[in-house]
Every structure is written in structure tokens, then in C-alpha cells.
Length: 248
Ligand code: ADP
Image 1 (cartoon, rainbow, N blue to C red):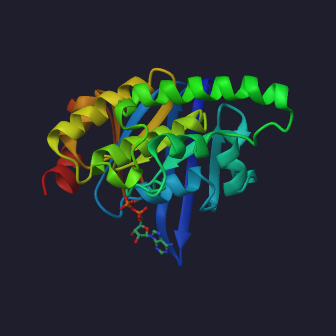
Image 2: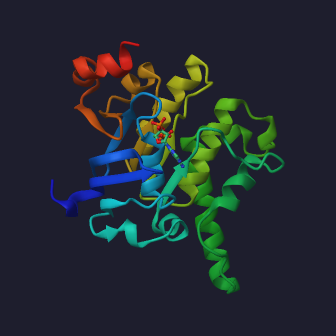
């Protein structure tokens, strides 16, 4: 795949903390519109990789490109967020004292127009977008409830909805099903699969049942590099993956 066709292109990326190489010559390529699951043992470098993509950590060496030709190493975290890379951390951080709908409205991208005529049109577009997000996250019936009153799973879906409201090109999602019931896990897989029809997605996850539900290409990291990559069946049959991760 040429770099032009990628949403994310990491090549030969390394980063050290006090002489310790957390990311070691890492290369990872994600096609536009692709969803990828990242697995690997604790300390493999999954979080550091996400930090590099979002500009929180600057690599010592290597290339990091977004959407074909945007060199992310030349931009800071705030600029990268504005470019359309949305990140969801493991713990949900919704505004508990606001309703579900207000959480989504507050997340919409861009300042409100100061021109009233434009504002009306914009408001109509925005409410349509909110309706779409409520439908995809299946939170329509909870739209007027306080976020504080949602279940853990619903808070996670709301936060994913808040990311969608920012209209990102790439979503980075960190362990979305940690602490979820089986039914919530299944629902989260459905939600991410639906989102991946229109967005590129990177999901870091330890729950292999969930990764199987996603049915996407898997990359296993170990010691800051790619240990194995391919279908979940191929990666989980890889002796090296069994040794350092699955066979524990
Ligand atoms: P994972 O998310 O796969 O568990 P991390 O990316 O958090 O792995 O960590 C990779 C390695 O880098 C670990 O050994 C961790 O201790 C180390 N590390 C991560 N961030 C820092 C930091 N800011 N300073 C020192 N070491 C770090």
C-alpha cells in the first residue's frame, strides 16, 4: 500500500525514556477506512504508540504520517486533535451533571456561528447529527437523562458518541470493554463495526472474545515492535505470540 492510501503510516519509529526503548523500530500501516485491533502484553508499547500518534510523545526517530501526507512529528497535541484524530481513554470521562444530549452538543466541532441566519441552518444540521449519533450509540431513549445515571457501558458508548461529534477521520480507542458485561461487550463490537464503515479505527484491547467479534486484522506488539500481524486466527497461532502473551 502506498503512503497516499493510508490513514496512518508509522515507519521505523523509536522512542526511549531514560535510555529504555519503549518503542523500538516500530512500523505500522493502516489503510483509509480500516479498523485494526492492537494486542500485546503489558509494557509492549501500546499506550506509547497511541501517545506518539496523538502528539503527546515525540518519537526520537522514524516517520509518522496521518491521512497520507501529514507529518505528525511536526505538529503538537492540540493541532493533531484539530486535524481529526480522536482518542478515547479506558475510563469514560463524560460530563456527569449534563444530559446525554448536552454531552454530545458540547462535543460538536467548531465555534457556533455568530451570524443568526447561518446559526439556524447550523443548528438544524447539528441536531440532525446528534440524532444520528444517538441512533448509532443506541442512546436515543436516554437523551434527556443525566450522564451520571447511565450504566458503565452506556457511558463508554456516550463517550464514543462524543468523539464522533467531533467528526474525526481516525478514532483511537483504548480498552473499550474493560469492566463491561458480556452483553455490553457484544454491543460495543456492533457499535465499533458500524463506526468503522465510515471511519478508520485503532482499538487496543486485551479481551480476545471481543477482538474476535470485531473480526478485523490484528497487530501484536512486544517490546515496542510488531511481533505478529494478520488475522486473529493467524496471530493467535503464532508461537511467538503464544509465548509472550496468549500462553501466560
Ligand atoms: P502498554 O500500553 O503496552 O502496556 P506502555 O506503552 O505503557 O505499554 O509502556 C511501554 C514501556 O515503556 C513500559 O516498559 C513502560 O514502563 C515504559 N514507559 C512508558 N511511558 C514511560 C515514561 N513516561 N517514562 C518511563 N518509562 C515509560
